[in-house]
Amino acid sequence: MSAALTDDIDDSVIRLGGHKGLEVELLPFGATIRSIRLFGQELTLNYPDPADYQTDQFYLGATAGRVANRIAKGRFELNGVAYQLDCNNGPNHLHGGVTGFNRREWQVLKQQSDSVQLYLRSADGDQGYPGAVQVWQQFRIVDKQLELSFLALSSKDTVLNLTNHCYFNLNNDKLNDGGSSVENHQLQLTATHYLPTDEHAIPTGERRAVAGTAFDFTNAKLVGPALKQQDQQLALANGFDHCFIWQDADAAELKLMAVLSSSQSGRQLEVLSTQPGLQLYTGNFLAAPFAARQGICLEAQGWPDAINQLGFPGTLLKAGELYQQQIVYKFS
Ligand code: BGC
Image 1: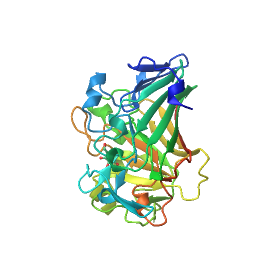
Image 2: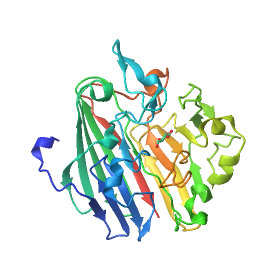
Image 3: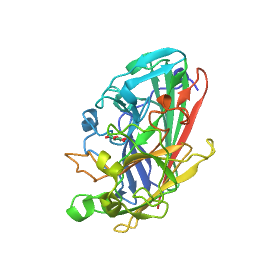
Protein backbone atom coordinates (compact mmCIF):
# COMPACT_ATOMS: atom_id res chain seq x y z
CA MET A 1 0.00 0.00 0.00
CA SER A 2 2.50 2.59 -1.12
CA ALA A 3 1.72 5.89 -2.79
CA ALA A 4 4.80 5.57 -4.92
CA LEU A 5 3.50 2.42 -6.57
CA THR A 6 0.35 3.96 -7.96
CA ASP A 7 -0.19 6.47 -10.72
CA ASP A 8 -1.43 9.99 -10.12
CA ILE A 9 -4.67 10.67 -11.94
CA ASP A 10 -6.81 13.68 -12.74
CA ASP A 11 -7.81 15.37 -9.49
CA SER A 12 -10.76 17.56 -10.50
CA VAL A 13 -14.28 16.70 -9.25
CA ILE A 14 -14.54 12.94 -8.80
CA ARG A 15 -17.89 11.41 -9.76
CA LEU A 16 -18.85 7.97 -8.51
CA GLY A 17 -21.85 5.71 -9.09
CA GLY A 18 -25.05 6.72 -10.81
CA HIS A 19 -26.24 3.46 -12.24
CA LYS A 20 -28.23 2.33 -9.17
CA GLY A 21 -29.60 5.74 -8.21
CA LEU A 22 -26.82 6.89 -5.86
CA GLU A 23 -24.37 9.45 -7.26
CA VAL A 24 -21.53 10.93 -5.24
CA GLU A 25 -19.18 13.81 -6.01
CA LEU A 26 -15.90 14.19 -4.16
CA LEU A 27 -13.11 16.73 -4.13
CA PRO A 28 -9.46 15.85 -3.48
CA PHE A 29 -9.32 19.15 -1.54
CA GLY A 30 -10.10 18.09 2.02
CA ALA A 31 -11.15 14.61 0.81
CA THR A 32 -14.52 16.32 0.67
CA ILE A 33 -17.93 14.86 -0.10
CA ARG A 34 -19.34 17.58 -2.30
CA SER A 35 -22.63 15.97 -3.19
CA ILE A 36 -24.71 12.87 -2.54
CA ARG A 37 -27.74 12.46 -4.76
CA LEU A 38 -30.29 9.69 -4.61
CA PHE A 39 -32.41 9.45 -7.76
CA GLY A 40 -31.43 13.05 -8.50
CA GLN A 41 -32.28 14.46 -5.05
CA GLU A 42 -29.41 16.22 -3.28
CA LEU A 43 -29.04 15.03 0.32
CA THR A 44 -26.18 17.22 1.58
CA LEU A 45 -25.38 20.93 1.79
CA ASN A 46 -22.84 22.09 -0.75
CA TYR A 47 -21.33 25.04 -2.57
CA PRO A 48 -22.05 25.31 -6.28
CA ASP A 49 -18.44 26.19 -7.10
CA PRO A 50 -15.65 23.77 -6.04
CA ALA A 51 -13.43 26.85 -5.48
CA ASP A 52 -15.72 27.92 -2.60
CA TYR A 53 -14.42 25.00 -0.53
CA GLN A 54 -11.07 26.80 -0.25
CA THR A 55 -12.65 29.49 1.94
CA ASP A 56 -15.23 27.31 3.73
CA GLN A 57 -15.44 27.78 7.52
CA PHE A 58 -17.91 25.00 8.29
CA TYR A 59 -15.93 21.88 7.34
CA LEU A 60 -18.64 21.24 4.74
CA GLY A 61 -18.43 17.59 3.68
CA ALA A 62 -14.74 17.50 4.59
CA THR A 63 -12.51 14.94 6.24
CA ALA A 64 -11.66 16.21 9.73
CA GLY A 65 -8.21 15.29 11.13
CA ARG A 66 -5.65 14.65 12.44
CA VAL A 67 -7.92 14.79 15.44
CA ALA A 68 -11.54 15.59 14.71
CA ASN A 69 -13.39 17.54 17.41
CA ARG A 70 -11.63 19.28 20.28
CA ILE A 71 -8.48 18.89 22.32
CA ALA A 72 -8.66 21.06 25.44
CA LYS A 73 -6.29 24.04 25.23
CA GLY A 74 -4.59 22.23 22.33
CA ARG A 75 -2.43 20.42 24.87
CA PHE A 76 -1.57 16.82 25.59
CA GLU A 77 1.26 14.71 26.87
CA LEU A 78 2.54 11.60 25.17
CA ASN A 79 5.46 9.40 26.27
CA GLY A 80 6.51 12.13 28.70
CA VAL A 81 6.60 14.89 26.07
CA ALA A 82 4.21 17.85 26.24
CA TYR A 83 2.70 18.95 22.93
CA GLN A 84 1.05 22.30 22.17
CA LEU A 85 -1.21 22.43 19.10
CA ASP A 86 -2.89 25.43 17.46
CA CYS A 87 -5.84 26.82 19.34
CA ASN A 88 -8.17 27.63 16.45
CA ASN A 89 -11.47 27.46 18.39
CA GLY A 90 -11.45 29.79 21.37
CA PRO A 91 -9.10 28.24 23.93
CA ASN A 92 -9.17 24.84 22.16
CA HIS A 93 -7.86 22.94 19.18
CA LEU A 94 -10.59 21.91 16.70
CA HIS A 95 -10.60 19.45 13.78
CA GLY A 96 -6.82 19.23 13.40
CA GLY A 97 -5.96 22.93 13.53
CA VAL A 98 -5.74 25.82 11.09
CA THR A 99 -4.46 23.66 8.24
CA GLY A 100 -6.18 20.42 9.11
CA PHE A 101 -6.82 17.54 6.71
CA ASN A 102 -9.89 19.47 5.46
CA ARG A 103 -7.58 22.08 3.94
CA ARG A 104 -5.18 19.71 2.19
CA GLU A 105 -5.03 18.52 -1.37
CA TRP A 106 -5.33 14.74 -1.12
CA GLN A 107 -3.74 12.64 -3.82
CA VAL A 108 -6.00 10.50 -6.00
CA LEU A 109 -4.43 7.05 -6.01
CA LYS A 110 -6.93 4.89 -7.78
CA GLN A 111 -10.30 5.70 -9.31
CA GLN A 112 -12.96 3.38 -10.66
CA SER A 113 -16.62 3.98 -11.53
CA ASP A 114 -17.81 3.18 -7.98
CA SER A 115 -14.76 3.85 -5.84
CA VAL A 116 -11.77 6.06 -5.30
CA GLN A 117 -8.78 5.91 -3.01
CA LEU A 118 -7.32 9.15 -1.69
CA TYR A 119 -4.00 9.55 0.08
CA LEU A 120 -2.47 12.16 2.32
CA ARG A 121 0.94 12.38 3.95
CA SER A 122 1.15 14.63 6.97
CA ALA A 123 4.70 15.45 8.05
CA ASP A 124 6.15 14.89 11.52
CA GLY A 125 5.19 18.03 13.49
CA ASP A 126 2.30 18.97 11.19
CA GLN A 127 0.03 21.37 13.17
CA GLY A 128 2.11 20.43 16.23
CA TYR A 129 1.35 16.68 16.20
CA PRO A 130 4.10 14.07 16.55
CA GLY A 131 4.89 11.50 13.86
CA ALA A 132 4.68 11.46 10.07
CA VAL A 133 1.22 10.10 9.30
CA GLN A 134 0.06 8.48 6.08
CA VAL A 135 -3.69 8.19 5.49
CA TRP A 136 -5.55 6.21 2.87
CA GLN A 137 -9.23 6.95 2.57
CA GLN A 138 -11.42 4.92 0.28
CA PHE A 139 -14.90 6.03 -0.79
CA ARG A 140 -16.94 3.24 -2.31
CA ILE A 141 -20.52 2.98 -3.48
CA VAL A 142 -22.20 -0.35 -2.92
CA ASP A 143 -25.81 -0.34 -4.05
CA LYS A 144 -27.38 2.62 -2.18
CA GLN A 145 -24.65 3.00 0.40
CA LEU A 146 -21.51 5.05 0.52
CA GLU A 147 -18.70 3.40 2.46
CA LEU A 148 -15.77 5.38 3.86
CA SER A 149 -12.76 3.32 4.91
CA PHE A 150 -9.87 4.96 6.71
CA LEU A 151 -6.42 3.38 7.05
CA ALA A 152 -3.43 5.16 8.56
CA LEU A 153 0.09 4.59 9.79
CA SER A 154 2.33 6.80 11.90
CA SER A 155 6.12 6.86 12.19
CA LYS A 156 5.88 7.74 15.92
CA ASP A 157 3.28 7.29 18.64
CA THR A 158 0.61 9.92 18.00
CA VAL A 159 -3.11 10.68 18.25
CA LEU A 160 -5.54 10.22 15.39
CA ASN A 161 -9.31 10.57 15.08
CA LEU A 162 -10.70 10.83 11.57
CA THR A 163 -14.26 11.54 10.52
CA ASN A 164 -16.35 12.99 7.76
CA HIS A 165 -18.20 16.27 8.26
CA CYS A 166 -21.17 16.08 5.86
CA TYR A 167 -24.16 18.27 6.59
CA PHE A 168 -27.25 16.26 5.69
CA ASN A 169 -30.61 17.70 4.76
CA LEU A 170 -33.03 15.13 3.39
CA ASN A 171 -35.85 17.56 2.55
CA ASN A 172 -36.90 18.00 -1.07
CA ASP A 173 -36.64 21.73 -1.06
CA LYS A 174 -33.74 23.15 0.91
CA LEU A 175 -34.28 26.75 -0.10
CA ASN A 176 -37.79 27.70 0.88
CA ASP A 177 -38.67 28.21 4.54
CA GLY A 178 -40.63 25.02 5.03
CA GLY A 179 -37.94 22.81 3.60
CA SER A 180 -34.76 24.50 4.69
CA SER A 181 -34.44 23.42 8.31
CA VAL A 182 -33.59 19.93 9.55
CA GLU A 183 -35.90 20.55 12.53
CA ASN A 184 -38.61 18.55 10.72
CA HIS A 185 -36.28 15.51 10.48
CA GLN A 186 -36.79 12.44 12.63
CA LEU A 187 -33.67 11.18 14.33
CA GLN A 188 -32.90 7.95 16.11
CA LEU A 189 -29.60 7.35 17.93
CA THR A 190 -28.97 3.94 19.43
CA ALA A 191 -26.70 5.31 22.20
CA THR A 192 -27.87 5.18 25.83
CA HIS A 193 -25.25 7.72 27.02
CA TYR A 194 -23.60 10.93 25.90
CA LEU A 195 -20.78 13.21 27.06
CA PRO A 196 -21.89 16.48 28.70
CA THR A 197 -19.52 19.37 28.04
CA ASP A 198 -18.32 22.58 29.67
CA GLU A 199 -18.93 26.05 28.19
CA HIS A 200 -16.07 25.49 25.70
CA ALA A 201 -17.54 22.20 24.41
CA ILE A 202 -14.96 20.05 26.21
CA PRO A 203 -16.35 16.88 27.84
CA THR A 204 -16.54 17.17 31.62
CA GLY A 205 -15.63 13.49 31.99
CA GLU A 206 -19.13 12.45 33.00
CA ARG A 207 -20.97 9.81 30.94
CA ARG A 208 -24.60 10.80 31.28
CA ALA A 209 -27.60 8.55 30.59
CA VAL A 210 -29.89 9.97 27.89
CA ALA A 211 -33.02 8.47 29.49
CA GLY A 212 -35.59 11.10 30.41
CA THR A 213 -33.67 13.98 28.75
CA ALA A 214 -33.76 15.87 25.44
CA PHE A 215 -30.79 13.67 24.48
CA ASP A 216 -32.89 10.51 24.43
CA PHE A 217 -33.13 9.55 20.75
CA THR A 218 -33.32 5.81 21.44
CA ASN A 219 -36.76 5.97 19.82
CA ALA A 220 -36.98 8.10 16.67
CA LYS A 221 -38.24 11.62 17.36
CA LEU A 222 -38.36 15.04 15.72
CA VAL A 223 -35.24 17.19 16.02
CA GLY A 224 -37.08 20.56 16.33
CA PRO A 225 -39.05 19.83 19.52
CA ALA A 226 -35.96 18.19 21.11
CA LEU A 227 -33.98 21.38 20.45
CA LYS A 228 -36.65 23.40 22.27
CA GLN A 229 -36.55 21.31 25.46
CA GLN A 230 -35.23 22.93 28.62
CA ASP A 231 -31.77 21.50 29.16
CA GLN A 232 -28.65 23.16 30.50
CA GLN A 233 -26.47 21.22 28.03
CA LEU A 234 -28.55 22.37 25.04
CA ALA A 235 -28.40 25.96 26.28
CA LEU A 236 -24.60 25.80 26.68
CA ALA A 237 -24.03 24.57 23.12
CA ASN A 238 -26.86 26.49 21.45
CA GLY A 239 -28.30 23.15 20.33
CA PHE A 240 -26.93 19.64 20.01
CA ASP A 241 -23.15 19.58 19.72
CA HIS A 242 -22.39 16.49 21.78
CA CYS A 243 -20.77 13.12 21.47
CA PHE A 244 -23.08 10.12 21.90
CA ILE A 245 -21.18 7.06 23.09
CA TRP A 246 -21.29 3.29 22.61
CA GLN A 247 -19.35 2.08 25.62
CA ASP A 248 -19.53 -1.66 25.18
CA ALA A 249 -19.39 -1.97 21.41
CA ASP A 250 -16.87 -4.25 19.72
CA ALA A 251 -14.31 -1.90 18.15
CA ALA A 252 -13.94 -3.95 14.98
CA GLU A 253 -17.65 -4.22 14.18
CA LEU A 254 -19.90 -1.92 12.22
CA LYS A 255 -22.87 -0.93 14.33
CA LEU A 256 -25.98 1.04 13.49
CA MET A 257 -25.61 4.40 15.24
CA ALA A 258 -28.11 6.78 13.68
CA VAL A 259 -31.22 6.84 11.52
CA LEU A 260 -32.26 10.19 10.06
CA SER A 261 -35.37 10.71 7.95
CA SER A 262 -37.54 13.40 6.43
CA SER A 263 -41.27 12.75 6.15
CA GLN A 264 -41.37 15.60 3.62
CA SER A 265 -39.31 13.62 1.09
CA GLY A 266 -39.53 10.10 2.48
CA ARG A 267 -35.73 9.82 2.33
CA GLN A 268 -33.79 8.05 5.06
CA LEU A 269 -30.14 7.83 6.04
CA GLU A 270 -28.60 5.19 8.30
CA VAL A 271 -25.13 5.79 9.74
CA LEU A 272 -23.06 2.76 10.70
CA SER A 273 -19.52 2.84 11.99
CA THR A 274 -16.76 1.03 13.83
CA GLN A 275 -16.10 4.22 15.84
CA PRO A 276 -17.04 4.37 19.56
CA GLY A 277 -18.77 7.77 19.37
CA LEU A 278 -20.89 10.02 17.18
CA GLN A 279 -20.95 13.80 17.45
CA LEU A 280 -24.45 15.10 16.83
CA TYR A 281 -24.15 18.66 15.55
CA THR A 282 -27.37 20.43 14.58
CA GLY A 283 -25.69 23.14 12.49
CA ASN A 284 -25.93 25.57 15.38
CA PHE A 285 -23.37 27.98 13.94
CA LEU A 286 -24.09 27.57 10.24
CA ALA A 287 -24.32 30.99 8.60
CA ALA A 288 -24.42 32.59 5.13
CA PRO A 289 -24.67 31.25 2.48
CA PHE A 290 -26.40 28.66 4.66
CA ALA A 291 -28.63 29.12 7.70
CA ALA A 292 -28.43 27.75 11.24
CA ARG A 293 -30.05 24.28 11.38
CA GLN A 294 -30.05 23.89 7.63
CA GLY A 295 -27.89 20.80 7.93
CA ILE A 296 -27.19 18.11 10.51
CA CYS A 297 -23.83 16.41 11.03
CA LEU A 298 -23.67 12.83 12.28
CA GLU A 299 -19.92 12.49 12.81
CA ALA A 300 -18.84 8.99 13.76
CA GLN A 301 -15.57 9.44 15.64
CA GLY A 302 -13.50 8.79 18.76
CA TRP A 303 -14.52 10.62 21.94
CA PRO A 304 -13.52 14.31 22.10
CA ASP A 305 -10.42 15.24 24.11
CA ALA A 306 -9.85 11.51 24.75
CA ILE A 307 -6.08 12.00 25.04
CA ASN A 308 -6.63 14.16 28.14
CA GLN A 309 -9.51 12.24 29.72
CA LEU A 310 -8.91 9.37 32.07
CA GLY A 311 -10.94 6.30 31.13
CA PHE A 312 -12.05 7.46 27.67
CA PRO A 313 -11.31 4.91 24.92
CA GLY A 314 -8.01 5.95 23.37
CA THR A 315 -7.33 7.87 20.20
CA LEU A 316 -3.68 6.91 20.55
CA LEU A 317 -2.03 5.44 17.46
CA LYS A 318 1.20 3.60 18.16
CA ALA A 319 4.11 3.84 15.73
CA GLY A 320 3.73 1.27 12.95
CA GLU A 321 0.26 0.16 14.11
CA LEU A 322 -2.55 0.18 11.55
CA TYR A 323 -5.40 2.65 12.19
CA GLN A 324 -8.56 1.24 10.70
CA GLN A 325 -12.08 2.71 10.86
CA GLN A 326 -15.19 2.63 8.73
CA ILE A 327 -18.22 4.84 8.29
CA VAL A 328 -21.19 3.78 6.15
CA TYR A 329 -23.97 6.09 4.94
CA LYS A 330 -26.88 3.96 3.78
CA PHE A 331 -29.69 5.70 1.92
CA SER A 332 -33.22 4.74 1.03
C1 BGC B 1 -18.29 20.77 16.04
C2 BGC B 1 -18.88 22.14 16.25
C3 BGC B 1 -18.22 23.09 15.29
C4 BGC B 1 -18.39 22.58 13.89
C5 BGC B 1 -17.64 23.44 12.92
C6 BGC B 1 -18.57 20.36 14.65
O1 BGC B 1 -18.02 19.09 14.41
O2 BGC B 1 -18.82 19.81 16.94
O3 BGC B 1 -18.70 22.57 17.57
O4 BGC B 1 -18.75 24.38 15.41
O5 BGC B 1 -17.93 21.28 13.78
O6 BGC B 1 -18.20 23.37 11.68
